[in-house]
Image (cartoon, rainbow, N blue to C red; front, side, top):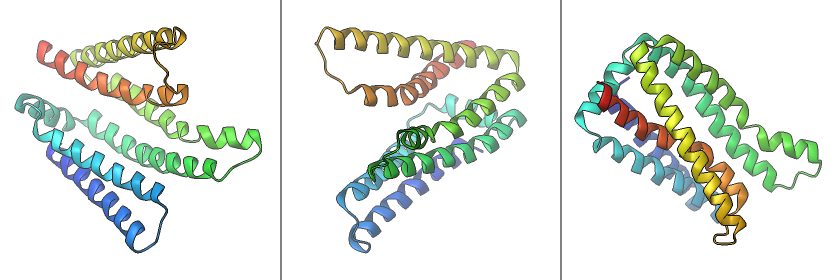
Amino acid sequence: MTLRRWMWIFVGIGLAALALAAAGHWLLDWPEGPVSMWTGIGIGYLVCSLLFLVLPRWWRQHCDEMFATQASRRYQRAMWPTMIAYSLLLFASIWWLKQGIQPLALRALVAVAPVVPLLFFLRAALRYLREIDELQRRIETEAIGIASLLVSMLYFAGGLLQKAEVIDIDSAAAMIWVFPLLCFIYGIAKMRLTKRYL
């Protein structure tokens, strides 16, 4: 799969989310919350698809070469179902929790349900790391290390600022954003390391 195809997948998801938001607003008489959520998802995917256009040419070529390898194809076949399951479970979990589940144990299970597909994603990522060549493995592990250290330091600094009452951030929101921030910094680090080593 090429980056151009990824871009069109993002465009398709973004347009589908916007169409769902429009149908919910004008045809299904949804409340404002779900309409805003699907509108935000649609805009987010469309913005991400535009980011593919500003990537440097060397990076696009490198990604297309990497996507052509057997390890990468196997990784993508494992990744897509887990990401779809994660997204669906996340929305179902949030919706169900908003309905007011009373038993604490059931509420805890529903809250952490989206983590289960991420465990399968982790397994696929570790298998991918074992299957790639030594240089690419070095780039991947350094990028993961840089992202982990930077996010950990940022989280630690935020905790200190929170304790000193300099900032006031909702702890649940901060915890939820750790994984996406980790992925974002990993992507930037991988890009820089790839340019340095290749």
